[in-house]
Image (cartoon, rainbow, N blue to C red; front, side, top):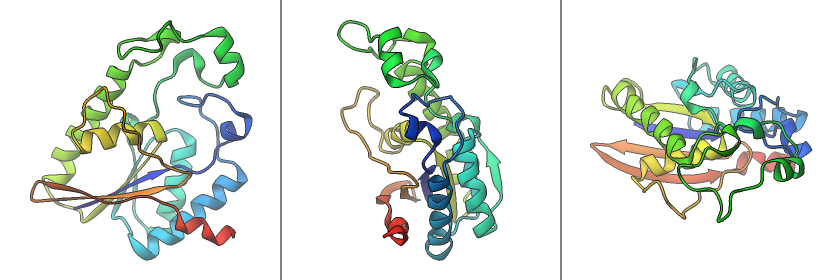
Length: 205
């Protein structure tokens, strides 16, 4: 089975330099164009049979555009939402830094300062999703390819689940706007086929 892991297009928060997380900003006009180019490329190269998406509108809209192009149905999956950043959500980054400075020594894995989800809780949510996904989709092997449309932070957590990395991990997986990753699971073997493909955006050049 193949798993397409896709980040949403550019959102309004990106332009305004705001903390996004659970703040539900829409795609920009550029983000919509990015999603259209993504959908065209995925349809021609790796069309999914099913799309699971975060319900936050920047991801859900990206998934809807992908669904329209490929004909794959969309299912909302709350566990694919971005890190719950509590009181930081929607704040300009400068204001957030002044109102909610990091604790001395930086954020620790169990910290929930500013009413946020801790790193441990974030990873646990990703592991919960991955366990359900494994038992509901991978093991029954009813689909050849499924797309997951999510966010940069959650995609990093899903990578750590997929690669069985520890909670405390210095490895970071980059994902640009509408970046695409392809994973494969065959007979228990997990393979990263490619990471952060963005050539569909070359149409802008």
